[in-house]
Structures are given as structure tokens and as C-alpha cells.
Image 1 (cartoon, rainbow, N blue to C red):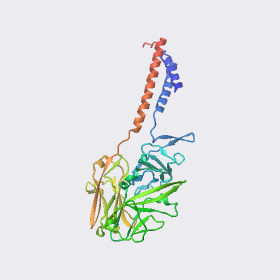
Image 2 (cartoon, one colour):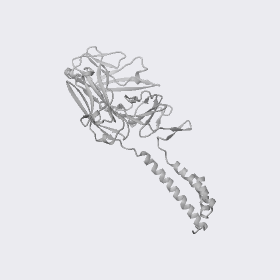
Image 3 (cartoon, helix red, strand yellow):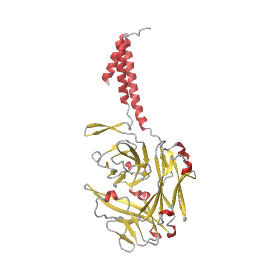
Image 4 (cartoon, rainbow, N blue to C red):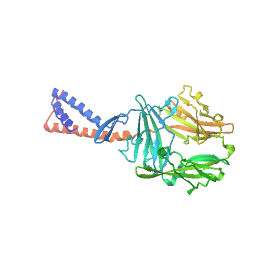
Amino acid sequence: MGSSLSCLHAQWVLLLSGSSKGKAQVRACSFFIIIIFISCLPLPSFLMRLASSNDKIFLIYIENCPDHIISFQHYYELHGEPVVLKCPSPRYKHLDFSSLTHNITWYKNDSKTMISGRGEDPRIWAKGDALWFLPARQEDSGVYVCTRRNNSYCAEVSIHLTVVEKTAARDIAYMQVLFTFTSGKIVCPDLWEFTSNITSLELKWYKDALLLEDNGEKFVFLKGSNSLIFTSVLPTDSGYYTCKMSFPYEGVTYEITRTIQLQTVEQEKRITPIIVYPTQKTTSAALGSKMTLPCKVFAGLSRHIDTDVEWLANDTIIDVVYKQNRVTEGERQETTENGENFIEVPLIFESVEEVDFYTDFKCLAQNRYGSQVLPTRVKQEAVGLSWYIAVIPVALACVILGAIFVHKCWKQRADKGYMMAKV
């Protein structure tokens, strides 16, 4: 930078003296200064990012992915416990990203810094389609973005993580339902990443902080299973249950806790559909982005064909409102989890437009025994200003330096008695 300023100063003096050679040379030096000025500005993250590893600098090209999908699997975890975020693969019609497994990268939305292997950070690291926290802390809460890409395409998925203190475990409890006066079981959820290499799973079960015993009368513990079996479910069995397991990793033993809120339901209500998610009343989306909004319905023990699930826009079926198929219903998916039936129907936005922010969307689940309606709205995602805020002070600094330099040149010229040629 200093040599370029000296160059411009010398040629500026020649220009003021009327030399044609000075004019040509000062143009070249001015162009060089412009390049230096531009280099002062930070480039946006979608163009390039500098990463340092082993005292070497690598230039990494970050493409702007055409699709940004919002994951509705919001992780709620406890402070001080291991956490694994999984990069999902939506499989809804044309939004099929299951084949994009060649390269997966992670970063936290507010930092844009890529999360690499464990060598960079022993507590948070990426491994394949999983992001590990050993352990998680409250300051880890936020939005994490995983990018799936192959040679011709890429898609970003946003995943929300909320880490709370252990005293708030009931606030993030898993909801499970059992029917009264019959046998049933509750499941200690989301343990697969921690149990895949464990040959003998050992869990401890609690109800309202009291340790439960396997007496064969009320409760049955199956060895190596993540289930707690009720021989006969009573209405009084409703409440909060906690399962705990130990997770040893590289000489350190961590505790994993899951809290379950058990709701007991009468037999005659078992086939009334219950909408499980979306649980939030509003969903943020950017203009022009693609989005998938799933509606998952608990159908109880009834057959899948007995329950209808559909989306409405302003109380009208989707096909009538969006005749150009910009917004469509995805394929109906029928699954069975823990012996219970679920139905999932996604609402797919090919491109979010402003009119969607003023549309009332509803998921309707019904059968001959009852129905449930869940309204939801799409709101415009706030545009981040962090890049512009970062640019302003650097740009101002460059402008100030340029002004000081020009002032110095004119002052030196005046001191030496140079005069502008009259035309």
C-alpha cells in the first residue's frame, strides 16, 4: 500500500507540471490504487472465504445454493449433555436431496464460519451428515445450516437448536400418548447416534424424579431396549417420565437425559386425528426461496385410509387457489412409529411470493370421529445487515486515507510553488 501511494504521489507531481508522461503514468497508478481500495472491502461469503489450517491459507469457493429448505425438526437439548444434529434429506416430489451426500458442510447462521473436523474444535465438530456437540452449551443455541452438494447441484437446510438448563427439562419434554386400560409403552427417543456402537443398552427410568423398578407387575424393562412397558395403562399414569443413560467417549463419560410427557387417552378417542406439527403459528421464509411446510398427523390405532389430511389456503383447497402449481400439496406419506400410525402431507412452495405473506394456510385432518384444524402463516424473513455493517467502517477508513493522501499531495505542490497551467 505504501509503495502504491508513493507511485501516485510522484506521478501526480508530473501531472501538475503539465507532463503528458505524468498524465499516463498517474492513470496507471490511479487504477492500481482503485484495486487496492476494492481489496479493502470484505467480499460476501457466497463468493469466497479464507480458512487457516496448519499455517496455510486456502481459498474456498462457496456457491450460492438455489434451494434453501427450512427443517421443522427443532432440536431442544439440555446444557452439558451430548447433542447430535442430523442434516435431513427431504424427499418430497421434485425436492429430493437424498442423492446429495457427496459433500456436506456445516456452519452457524450468524457466523458464516464453516465447522470442520474435531482437530479445529474438540467440542463442536462435523462428521458426515452429523454435527456433534460434546457437550452442548446454552450459547450454542441458534440456527445451523447444512449444505448438501454434488457436482451439479446444492441445497441448504436450516436447523434450529435450543439449549436450556437442566431445570427446564419439562419445558422441552417429548409428547407421547398411550390409551387407557390396555398395555402400552413409551420410548426413550433420539438415542441412535449414541447407541449404535453400544452392545448392551442400560437405561434408568424415573417418574417425577422417583426411580422406577422392574417389578413385572406395573412396569417391564426389556434388556437392551429403549422402551418402558406398561402392563395396563391407567389415567393416573399421566405425567413426566425421565430416561437416563451414560455415554462414554474417549475417556469421558457423559449423561444423556430425555424427558417424556405422557398423555393418557380414553379408548373411544383413539381414532380422532391429532396434528403433531407444525407447532409454531408462523414460519419465516425469504422472497423467491423454496420451502416445504409439512403437516404431520397422529392417527392413533386407526387405519391410514380412515383419515384425510389436506392443506387449505384462505379456506380453499390448494389446487383451486394456485392453478399454476407454484404451491402444491406433496405426496402423502404413511408411517408407523412405536405401533402408532402417522400421516404426513407437505405443502411445497416452488417460489415464495409476497402474496403468500397475506394468505391464511391451514392443515385439516379429519375422519368420521372428529377433526382438527391447525392455522399457520408465512412471514417474510428479516434481511441480515451484518455484511453491510462490516463494510461501512472499512470503506470509511479507505475514504479517509484517500482524502488525507490527496490533501498531502496538494499541500506539497503548493509548498514547492507549482502552478496550474491556464487554458
